[in-house]
Length: 306
Image (cartoon, rainbow, N blue to C red; front, side, top):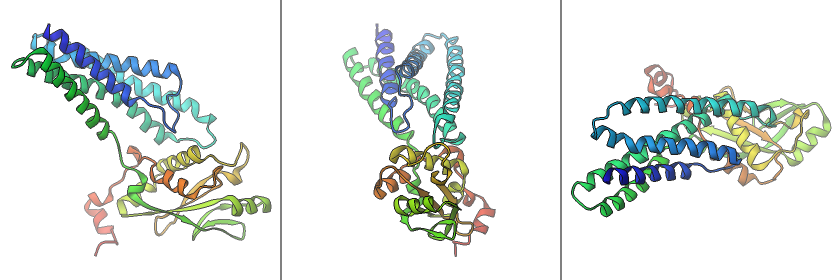
């Protein structure tokens, strides 16, 4: 009876963890019932596996470990499916996410199934441990409290860094040096049409991202990270462009000496504060993180240190 109650409660807590982590945000994925069904079904499977793992081991049913290995294989397939789905949707985006952003999203969806299984496993451990000394009711309450704590803790651990932690993001002046579009002293692109230049000057917004240290400079120089910033800014504020209008494509260029990034965008919503906040809250992609200061050569090359 205790084992059955433990499996049921742990599975429920794991499923709640996956449900809590499944939400549609500005990235708009998943945003259809089919996507919810797929992810919640896999989350339930992960929760069941995590819930039965400890009772199976206590019953000396070591063959249950093979099911855990099989589940890990299936969850790796989740990453592959998500990657392929987003890559197929990429041509429909005015401002693409980029391969690095897609890979990061796919990894997150895989990891969330492991977190659901980990939540149910922790709940099961708490319940079976408390059952040895107290009643089933007390064990159930302890398992629920522990499961809720695990949900909050694991979800917090999934939150990575944001661009605002790596760089000072500020508004900057847009101007032209002949046909060259400039954001402060950073050259963005060549704009040949007079009408396009006038529109950019009138409705465009310039932003400069100044890295806080050499590690941040190396991370923000990554092309995948820059594309993610452009995609998030365009998704949140919209852009005044259509297919075949390269003059109004938002761009993010790097100053070759300082490593600062200059961004020029003609947003649908003329709100500079919202644009700066969107950029600051863009996630730092796992694939883009660079830490040259972790190596001796990088520290020697760091001219910022005295």
